[in-house]
Amino acid sequence: MAEEGRAIHGDSPVRVRPEGSLAAGARVTVVRDRGWDGPWRAEFQGVVDALVAPEPVVHPQAEVGELAYWVAFDEPQYDSDGGGPYRKALIWSRYLRPVRR
Image: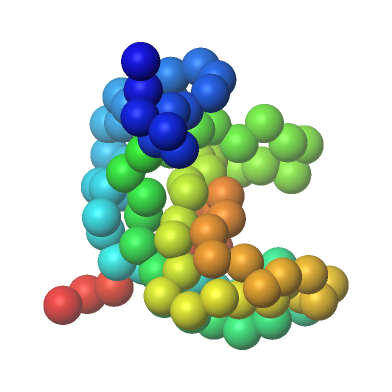
């Protein structure tokens, strides 16, 4: 039996990372879209989460082969509609830039 408060309910997360995807733990900058005022109020940094592998974006506006990553933010952030503050979100790859060290 799992310890109190430590159990995870639901399906096991997908852990196989697509070839060429950003590595778990990679530092990224979340950028704003050049064509509209969003999806976030500001640009900020975070880390690609290791719990779930990136997944294909299934949306009519997705680019071919576009992935979505769970990103943990360095500081809580607000989206362009004022929602939040969020500490983590599923972010499309077009809005992620690897941080060069």
